[in-house]
Length: 291
Length: 286
Image (cartoon, rainbow over all chains, first blue to last red; front, side, top):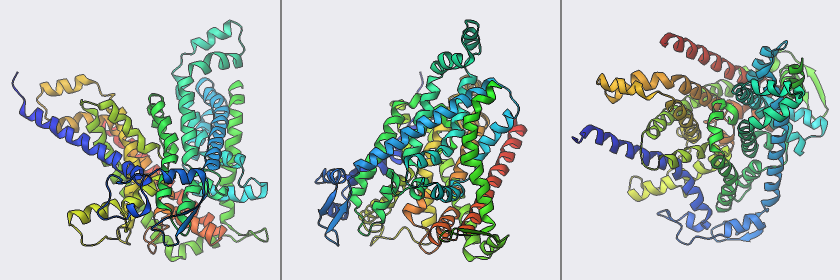
């Protein structure tokens, strides 16, 4: 076979492209990870330490244990750090709460929109989707006022309810799509065998739509994990994002510790995404969720 | 009726948590709220007028649109290129595709830190590299009034390019292979194949991703809060941050609400305009 010069050129070009893509995707991460293993003076060295010369785990130790630490290179000499563990626990509680709340409400609704026509079904479904286009910045104002009246500021429940604004419309939409793909015959068979309609939904449909449920659950958790605005305004540093932002706002920025904390904050979403990747890509079509 | 019953819980939740607060914010926009006395007085269009007359408002609207344009250009172009590259056969393709999901998964504020460090004026990676190579004589401040806006957009484009890439890649994989085979028979070159097969095929997907990118740009708050706080000066004072500033720092509740309504209007009109554009084009080409 004759070697195809242009084909080979293209292949070389493509490999070059792959290298560039990898650099674009990974370099920022790499620098964050590298920073988290450095001490502050190392960070300021010229030329930069592309690979930490004396890697240390002290940043991780400090953000886990918490306390006051003395460090070279800080103008004030010491930095005060609160342990990150309670915040991690809070983030997990809110995330799981949001998953439960969303699934409980959105699955029946998604099922109904797929299977039944009822008065207002088109209108309400359309409304569900357009409401999501209202910017969060407009929603947080009434929440702030109402939550102050109802004493929901800085509570798990308040934050979960607020964040459900982000997840429910999306979850209903995704779940409807999944149910659309499941043939009706299966439920009808169950109905003929004497199951109630609720039983058919519960015993036949839910097990079949497990991939959809998984995708929704992962989306909800990741959304809650990274959600900043509601957590900033409606709580007093309950979950991870406002606490991380607080690190930066304190008078003496503990950059290396903040890098370590940021690495912590990245692990759960990345792990979830990689574990459940095959369920998720389809759901991404609903995309605006994270926005 | 059974269907209605199943929808009721989620619909109630949406009414209580979306519609009611949204109506409330519209009401607030026409009032003067005093949080300490707990009084709400109706003031008509006053909030809107004072917003429209304020100096920051118009420049902020313009900055927001400009920012959104940067994000769209960066994310949609880079994302499409990424998808095209990763759609070809090469070794380790599945691994690289998994990597593509990662930026999309990380929290926005971590993304903000990431790029703040990389571009930092004292110890940033970019400054370090440029200095070592000899392109600059001293570290430069990247977050200057001229550069802050495009650079905060770069951070947003990074995440959104991953999202756009994912969407386009799944679109590309749905293209039937025999279309390319017959193009080969006709002797089409790479560019022709892209123009006449690949791009028309993924255009709806790419278009939706672009709309999402535009909305992300129009409503960006997290990155601005972390990276610049609207500064230096007012060079990155985007509309969402202006709402935040008026409402939560200046405690001008009514003005904040009025501003947030204008932001909503901006987002909705861009979306609507874009949907019409997309729909018309799609009909035109099919």
